[in-house]
Length: 482
View (cartoon, one colour):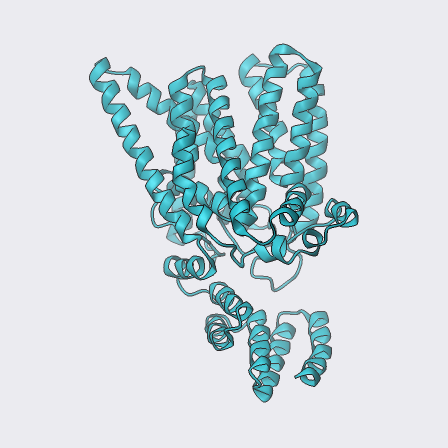
């Protein structure tokens, strides 16, 4: 199992950093680059890219001072974490089902599915790998505590949960999962068991509130700004449909997905989403007596809910493969159970060997797709050109290509891609700024001044008046320097 996972994701070891959060979280992060006890302390009181994941930043801190800006060790660490998570998933599936075939088939799906590539191949997605590692370790520790009643196991579970929360706030779903698991085992929850879960609930609520304060978009004019409204409900169902369909049929995937231009219930993708989700819920109710099916589905729904965009978090991505690195385990458990049930039905020898061959073919196909997708994360131009190929023209994708070329001193290419970004969306303010900087460096003083004035105009149109005033003051300084 671990060999299959290692071979599948080995292409990432040849990949570079990309200019999507890697600079902000690692390469240009002053908290990471400055080796001091003061910086290490500040990591636990500071958010990075509007997210609070201090444990991840602390690990980057030590990695950077051990290995520097060499991408290989960071990718190797991500691969090792993914393999550890695969092993924990196998152990969890085995404990829940008490059947090796279920655990092996389900954990192989978890290890090689193309949806896992973003979390493993993108260095900045380390938080997803790390929080899930601690999340699963916390669940398993609590599982053993329920049978052995050793206080050390309870404290270990609580410690792992704290580490999961410090890696990513999405770990807040664990108390709900623990309560539902206890109920599914005993058909009741005693006051003593509820008391044991209360510290988990307190930590989850505190972390969730803190993360919400930092992540919810507050600035009007942001591309990702959504109030609590019916739009959020439509988007939530659309996202759920996306994850379900692409988990089952992982083809024609894009590395990055951005917000749709419009959100309308009567548009076919969103209308179909409602129909699909309600049909699946009815099917789940009809088969509610199947314990494995219900467990997998409930785990998927509970852990998926925080990333369905019902709450308007900051960011430009409407969906992302890494968002369901944990949630997918629920469906993979159902997949392992289906594999086992098919093996048990019909003429034993013929059916068993036929199902094993079919399942092996599925795993190998998924592994080949994942290995191919790992190579798409090779570097910034590769990933953004692939996104343009799959998602179409986007101001964000063109801007990120412009940013890549600017940092490498290719200023003509920078101006070209900034122009493309502005054509797609004339309100893409930072493309004006980047273009002006490139023009200044090339000595195009008058053109740079005009572009900078356009940038100020766009900021005012977007309602960012304070920022516009600050930038106007900088204009004179820029012109004096160049």
